[in-house]
Length: 55
Length: 152
Image 1 (spheres, each protein chain N blue to C red):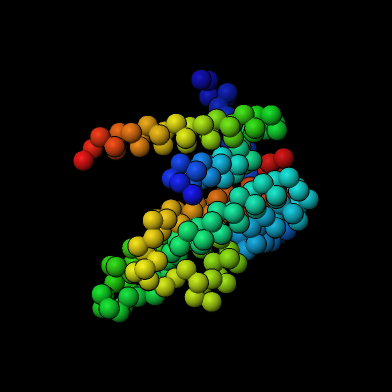
Image 2: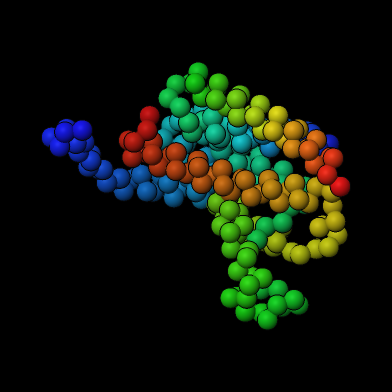
């Protein structure tokens, strides 16, 4: 399993829990969960590229 | 704001005893709190996420923390700095409930093994084990709030 898949799995489980405990309606929970998942992935990639250039 | 318009603090109702029991069950067996509340979807999603994280963490060779002093590198006292620094991750790991207890009793995932620590996925495994416990704390609090009638 490569690093990106592991990061996706981490983002998915965290997004499931964050989405499930927050908001009031199921639709809002889904939207929030997807948003959290996307944020984990995007921020992870950005940080990864920043660290790539730091020796 | 005029004095008469000041907001009055609403009295907080004490949580019923059943809510505490459901909270305890939710901590001990991840997902069971929502199962007891018949919230099948949340139980499957949140309990499933916790269990999945825990087993993925173990499969990756992750390491869990306890308060056993390392006599090789420390004085052997539980109050040694090197032992005390394990308290925060131990609290996180402890959130996994029965999974942590069973692994601790069977000495699975607690041994300081250099071969295991050299695995590429070792740190990933640690992280998954930590978040499994932390997510279960959130799950437990959610189950408690639902049982106490503070959340739908």
